[in-house]
Image (cartoon, rainbow, N blue to C red; front, side, top):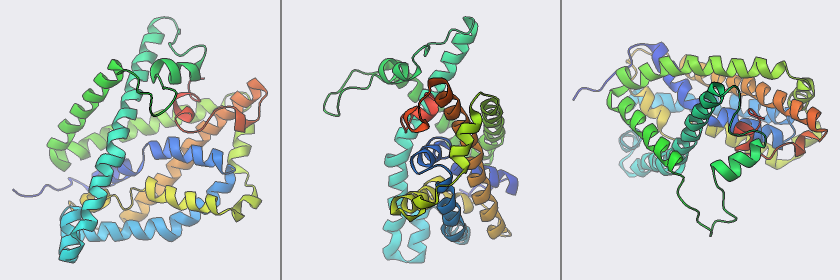
Length: 313
């Protein structure tokens, strides 16, 4: 069977950017900034982008484009003994990322339904008045420890199954009528929704407090190894480097392609989006700190709280 091709370079860029942009930009990036001194984290993050992210993105695009195959097949063509290097990221992405990402997307889907329900009931939302308590106790039903297994949340299970069906329908239509088409629909929607959150956050009382925390660096933090380690780790995570995804995407490009330009665009747009989305998170954190009279570090815990609690509080 003849391999599919991207209909346009713009479609490829949207798909590559769509793979790079995800919860890591909105959830993990903001959490790491919150944890590592706000603006301080942006310094090693941008250094990591220039010295590591963009060069490795060019390399992955080049491997996929040259070999015209998936990551395992590409590495086998480089050297037969290296095929396992291609299988490792595929298995890691499947069992280490995809399985939990789909569940988090299911959470988002349910919260969308909760939002519609609340609007139909005159602005009375399920998560009010205790946003954090609803998310952890009623929605996720978090147990007291890993050895205490709770019951099945049937709404989350049903939504997760629905998300898997949608993903299968996209993938079965191949790159041109599936992934590329989905990227052209969902990426503009994501940008619009993020812009709404950013400008709404900037309108809140205390937003300036949050932005100062976000953009003003504490130079003493730059001496901490953890800040640099997590900045470089975030670059690998957010750009999908080492996951085999960019190798596979580039393999569907036509022979005449400007891989360096595409790598620069994908990397810079992705990281710019992270910084842009962080404005929304820290604006709301500044508002919450102003309203509660607490320091920003004590307003909300990291992790999922920065998405499902901060934005809805």
